[in-house]
Amino acid sequence: METDRKRALLEKIESGYSLPVMSVVAVKLVELASDDACSVSELTSLIEKDPSLAANLLRMANNAFFRTSEPVATLQQAVMRIGFHQLRIMALSLSLRNTFPMGRIGVMDYEQFWRISLYRGLLAQSLSKHIKMSNEEEAFLAGLILEVGLLIFFDIFLKNKNEKDEFEFYSLERLLIREKERYGIDHREIGEAALRYWRFPDRIVETQRFCGTGTGGSNMIPPLACVCEIARVLSEKMLHHKEDFHVIFSEARETFGISDEIINDSIITSLEQVEEIAGSMKLELNKERDMLELMEKANRTLGKISEKISQIRTGQPLPSFDTLDAKAGQEDAVTYTLQAVAHEIKNPLIAVAGFAKRLAMKIDPGSENGRYVRIILEEATRLEAALKEMGK
Image (tube, rainbow, N blue to C red; front, side):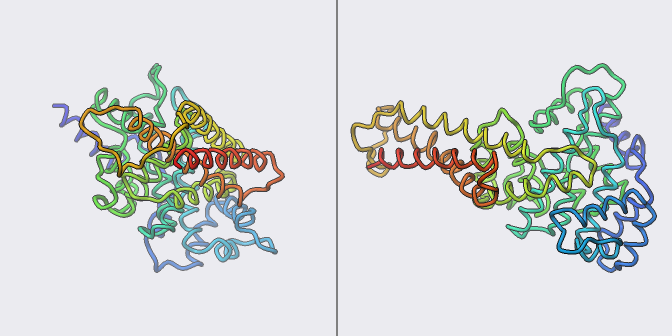
């Protein structure tokens, strides 16, 4: 019976039930986004039918990220400035964003939802560029709307109810389980049905089916879905203030084989771009605050590393793993010390130091954040030297 109700609901959603109405321009943009034969003039003529969208795209073309010496005054110039494919995807992203409200309604914080979504989209775009698994602009769009089903789920089940629990934006697996237990369906299933109704390309629709470590790594899922899943993990760990800094890197590294260098570059690139794109999407966002929160997370991790090092006896050299006779159940002091260094200190320290070094090359050294990152880098260097000394 429950399966029948779920099937009936999905069939209704695929027919448009309870879905916000996308503008005519947005629906046409979905078609153009997957049509390489569409022309610049065709795209320009379409966008001109939505004055608000046209104004936002012109503003985007003139922002610091895209701007060169001369400002642009027409949409055709904007197409040339931003690039045809990227403008097409950005126009669709803006249209989708305008389909939903902002602010807070009940337990749904739309500002926070779009903040996480924008970082996820930018991370997906940057990752796609590095690992060459999918089209960069398409990766941005797929990452941006990956959890759009949550907004529809809220409208169907929770909008007019007195729910007390906040949405767990930073624990997707737990949220999906809770939705399934309470309502017999989760928001990813609703999102897949909605994207089908809106006629998104199949490769974007199928990203809804993959979530969590159970996906089996990059060899088990389609390329675009893999990029979106990595970006989802990174954005959740990056923006969740309760997570330790090195956790941002661990799952992407261990499950998907993404190097720390690529993760660092993707995070910093997203921080460089996010404020300009957010402004065009009418989203309140402060990249300096987000960067500061990330550095504070890194600094807290260094504090834990420093405390751990101070607890380890340094009076004698440490043997290597190769020289240990590790018998089953053995828990002698040397084994414990090596494990503590290898697993609780070394990887987190490498993660923080790598991030600080990369960030130091990107931001103004005289700014408040520039001075803070220099302090973090100096402390990371000191701890690296202390760890190296212990291993002699």
